[in-house]
Image 1 (cartoon, one colour):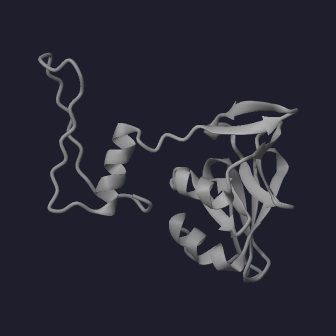
Image 2 (cartoon, helix red, strand yellow; image 1 turned 120 degrees about the horizontal axis):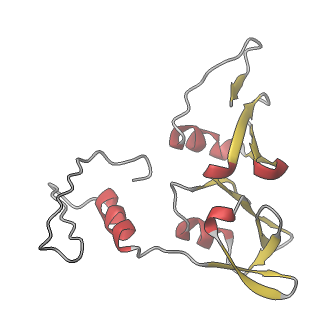
Length: 165
């Protein structure tokens, strides 16, 4: 499901059913099918909490701009707050929806829906501009993964540099 799963969807309205029933026809059980079932059953619903002003707050995932680690701590950035998290970055990467959050370096995960612009002007590095003037850098190790996940092929501007808006 990370890259999407090809499937046909059919919805039937029947007053005999008081709650929805989902049936999946497939030739074999794959990771994509398991992920689809998890999403339908909401098994991987993640509740994220962080410390702000010495209080623990629930952080709405849709408000997250980026999560990063520095000086042995993990921080979550929203529009107007910076939280300290108890979870490690690898735990968050495993728990967050890979269609909404992407690892861009060993020390950072960003919300795909908060990305405004990609800049490929520095060779081997992608600069990401996100909501509320947040800027991050994709490490060389993650450039290929991010291009693939986002379906971005190489495209050059008049200077021979890659740039995406």
